[in-house]
Image 1 (cartoon, rainbow, N blue to C red):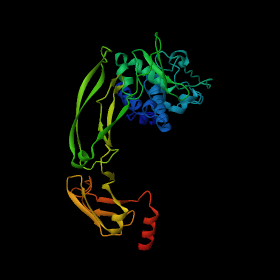
Image 2 (spheres, one colour):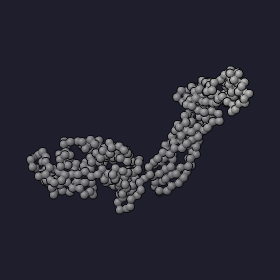
Image 3 (tube, helix red, strand yellow):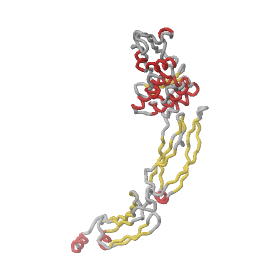
Image 4 (tube, helix red, strand yellow):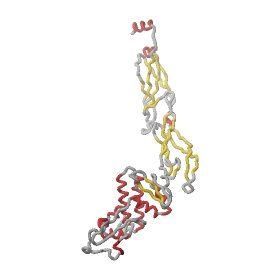
Length: 362
């Protein structure tokens, strides 16, 4: 029976887990919580540190044996206090050199020195990024796909690794070779898509041909290809709405760009949209405003509506026609209003005689 299980709990495995199970659990947890995948998340960074430290101990059979028998505190203190089983006893005296050289990742330089009288130093954890780099190197040819699976700036060649500096972006380093630049981050490209008000009113199916750059990870070669995208613009879709395509843009080492089309309404000759309403303006003279007027206006779907005023018509007057505006996307069968606004055109000048007559009339 093990002394404690918190390191096993961190990796989500049983205390009876095999080394292969521990390795697989660490890979899953490290990629899930890696800082590159959880930027600006102190909680994720702490979790990444926790699972890395658990792996550093449990992946080493000797350190795991000490942990199972006496717990983490004893391991960190370097045997400063005698474990149960005999005051002042030396539970590891059968091992060479009093357990010197015990500790660190494969190839590491850290040591753990146990003495029955309380050694001067205990086990010290490596940096989480160094633990991950050592693990990545142990993956051999799979290092490239392992780092790229972070989905946010990871990438490297076999035998290489990376580490953070001052909490910033990772710096890449490679064994026996120069530093390679970080893999480009996968981005989202947004493009304005101008659409006529009539097409938005009735809805339309569109085809778009785009040019996209491709990247062959096997050969490292780039090329350009045409791609046809098809999509529907639903009746009544609002300006600013996005039509999203995943993984259809330029292809980089880190993945393929997403593409978002942003609906932009083309300017209409006589109509303006206000939410689900359509607005048009008619202009009348001051004389007509005072004495009466009548006009015909066209709706977006070709209907003719008669608007009139018997006079006098005040500036700012408007007439509203329900259910003649744009379709409401969330309310099938419903439409907004058609609003006719009246603009009174005042004369730019009057003669003295006209002014006199108006004073007499008004």
